Image (cartoon, rainbow over all chains, first blue to last red; front, side, top):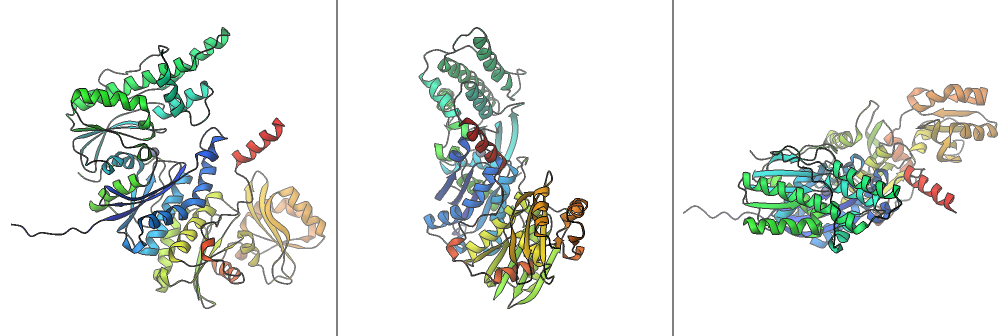
Length: 345
Length: 234
Ligand SMILES: [Zn+2]
């Protein structure tokens, strides 16, 4: 018999400020949320019709120490109870990222704690580790305002990008179509709702690209919606926004589902997960759930508050990095275009 | 009493540690560096150099702006986080006042200038004959507007700050013999000077740290445009 080693619990503070949420969270052993605080700025960006980077940065400075303190208070913990600080390094808005990064560095320095810079998308994927254990090989569909990616994970901390968007991200296409339909920002959830309630759909194209490609393209679809509206305007006809919403969403969902299914089969994955803000979309969720139930592959998508930007997911990914020995130093910087790199072989 | 001072409001990086009114270390670097990557390593380095641990400091002085939005925010974020987590008070000082104080021994009017682009500046004018009494409030001015105000004073004005050079011709044109240029050795912020100014303020309560914000002296562009649009609608 080997000797019985009690492993000490691991408490990680996560900090996230890559876009318009200022967030801090404490996660135990990489999968158990102890506290999760998010200060959303969505209200103050609404009047501008989208996230204004300078305004976002200003809000982050106002919120950052408040959310970190609240994360500690809700967990009933002190800095000395923590094992490390993890922070979103990128990608994201540079001016927003560096608030979280510099707060994390100052906090780590003052409390003599190890520091780990985390990739935002790794965070979105690891949000699932907070729901159920991740099993490999695993396929992640990452869909958000800035991302549409298929990522294959053969092991913990190991990433292979197998498909990505060649133009607009899915969430970006939603925002643009919302503008065509005069839906105020953020328009994605409203389009989802209209599509759910609609009894008919305009027939918009599906863009498949080369038959073996896992890449995506949504700009053609977006143009088709714009043209449809334009043609109706020219004929002084009114469009039915519900039919347009459903037509658009059906096209997005069909392509995302089909490519995810094909990849899941090719790589014989044990688990499929959806991640990122758009994975909260009901149409997409339902389609993926149905498809993988039929296929017999477990499919998971985290609850809404873990789909959108949060720091628990950063702490979850950071815990895996920390255990793999990854460390950052005081020169850590915000990196708006950071690539997703494996931390395990 | 041990103070940490930080000024990253513009391209120079100035940091200092002062103990019982003695400078232990003061550093200023004025090369194009990235504050986001550079400030914390520099702070870590000076603490090591003077063999003091962060927990030993008693207060933090921060140059609160105006200046580069990003530069000001990096300094303020670091200062706020240190202040909150170490539970030490945070004192903000105007970045223009820090520059003007460099010429504190000159008796008269000192004007500190920071380039805000498109012929605009952040500037403030102080009477140094009895401390640092503001004569023209820190703010965002068109260079022409600022010079008109200074001209009205009808007195010599000593200009401080390395951005003065790009406006020097215009300044001389407007103010003539009343335009005086401080030596370049006074053009950079000095974090010990910043601490000295902070020491003259009352220490704010610890819970003021959470609500501490930069002094931008200017609305974000999107906000200014939005306000203009609202006015137009009326
Ligand atoms: Zn995100």
